[in-house]
Image (cartoon, rainbow, N blue to C red; front, top):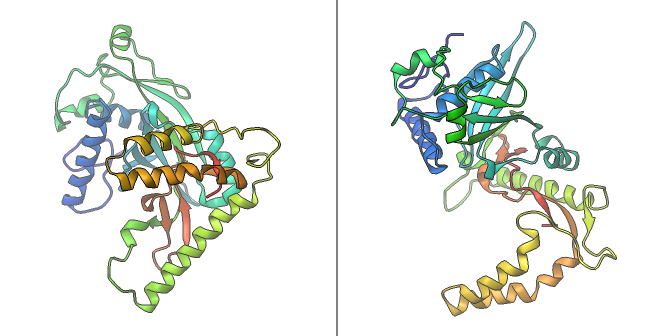
Length: 318
């Protein structure tokens, strides 16, 4: 496999882009690793794990990196077709519930990517410091430096002979593989003009309607096994995610702790109306439906995908 990535190591390719964009991607990833109390050199271990999980694939850096993960393309070529999926490395606090995503796909359809787990990458102790450089080439070709060998706990295990390093630094990244959906992140195409041309208006209208239909699928699925009506005979609907069980507590804190009387009044008003949510069915919500997680067709703004379901949980509809 002969791949290149400018200004980094030769094992993983950067997408075709300008040097400035490539540098921006590398800067973003440096921030991701340091923000999660990891060494930027740990990226090498992720790259090695990716090539070992899929030795016949072409591995490239994904150009739209998220806040919570390090993502790579894995492209598979055959005489009849080409298939590309995404490999994603996530800290434990940003884990994806694979079974919940499968339920979301049943409800919301092909706009939800299939996701499966490859276990956890046990990161070995890093002895190097600073940014990765070209002199790390031999490591990435399989040098058995025991302080740099990682272990994948799951399919395709790579053993680490240095038990002491594992003991000293128990650090893991969870590995997921998922469909590469068509479309582009909405912020890349979002208009920023004060007024819209007729064509731009109709594209925006198409997206709004598609998002409305997407959310409506959750409402209509309220009587399936993946959701529970909030108005059921049970005394209290059971919401077991990160947000649902704590709505009352969080709003109470906001009503008490927000810095201005106006903001505290808004929080108190929301708290007083919280009981109205019981009239709504409990459905599987995305949990982080922000523009960067919405994929659209470049020409028509048709909704093509909703990605990053790590915050998904059962909540009142809407």
